[in-house]
Image (tube, rainbow, N blue to C red; front, side, top):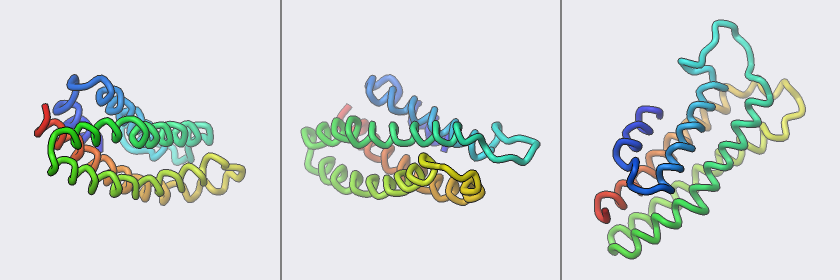
Length: 155
């Protein structure tokens, strides 16, 4: 996912302040995902669960990223696509609902771990992070397709 982000930053970085900010937030989200998942270079030699505070911070960041996409970025991208051609508008109308489907995974993860009262629930974290990771990867690919259409046809 980080390699895909680097490609996105190379492609669209500097084209729009909002998109730069959004891609930067994606980077921070991915770094924190790797930290709580124990993915290199954030893996540890000792086998331990992440601190609850780190998981909750990640949940906050995840919700901020999802919200920013839905309430700021997508609206602007879709509006630009609508102004610049029927094919772009149609693609945007197909992609945004598919992106929204991945939101459910993020919301479910957030609901489960934000209200965490029993540390034992953390034993399910690896499985839940894996499922969330797949949803995030799908989401990022769809978001990048939306940005590619905007960039290719309308820049």
